[in-house]
Image (cartoon, rainbow, N blue to C red; front, side, top):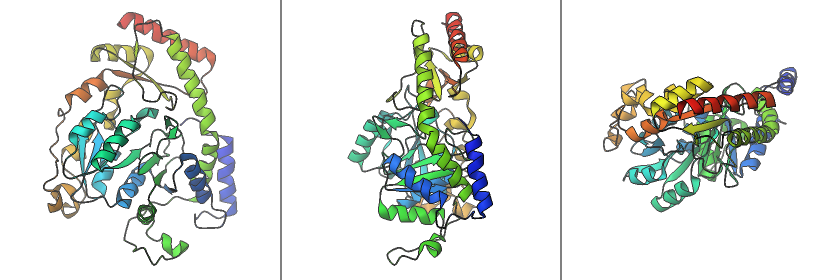
Length: 386
């Protein structure tokens, strides 16, 4: 969470006092946010959801991804990325990240098989993927691109807002994200028909409120719609995200300048001017060095962040894809030819890169004294470790 305060409390109170908590109403806060966020992203359709996970599922379902399909996901992402693939009945194929700890375009190209329908590039930790390379490969191989921008709201790649570059995108607005309403998310869609399917996935009853459509067949879905509280809070968060990210980028730039004469190697970034700068990252020649440095500066090693690395994805590694065997994608006959052999050590290159990458979290309200203290700590740690 970057910032949450008086303005959010006032917005929450306005909704509470109005007694209008349901999103289908005149002057809807949810609709206002969806329209504003759509304009910001340059995406025709945005829909609020209950989480980033449900946003990913809505995006995949919107484009008809399901049993018999493979979806490529990177080795480093929150487990929900791969779980969303299983949630629509498809099979996740896990591939390497590169030194930027984002999806490796070369690994993506190599992993495409006859059943591969889509790829989910994940903009992790506020950094961004190499979207030019990924989009080029996707166009050549006829793949759908569903951007997982759950950790990168407000980020951009070469001037294009993440989540609005691919065929679809997903955002998370939970407590730990740079835009938050506690829990929540949003799905973005480019195709009109796919957007209707995604909307039905989020709320299969929506057409009772917005009007039945003769050209669209509704289907059953569990539902994951947002409330007016979510919409009101997200409108406030949207107002401030650009200014906050400018501060973070300025802080990160100051830190990198402050340690430029050390032997530290800043982790390579794609489109560094557009990343959220919620972390400053350094790469080391060994895991031992990385852990020593992280301990000294109060950072974290990317490979030690729990469910963010594939070797911690127990339900996937153990082939427990659903609560009932008949609904388990790993057991569905349509998926028998999909690739689903996983092991904890199957991607040693990714594990090596992640074990050597240290992340230091940044906050937009850091004062000059705190920034200078952090620079001194980083410099001191570098002098000992390197």
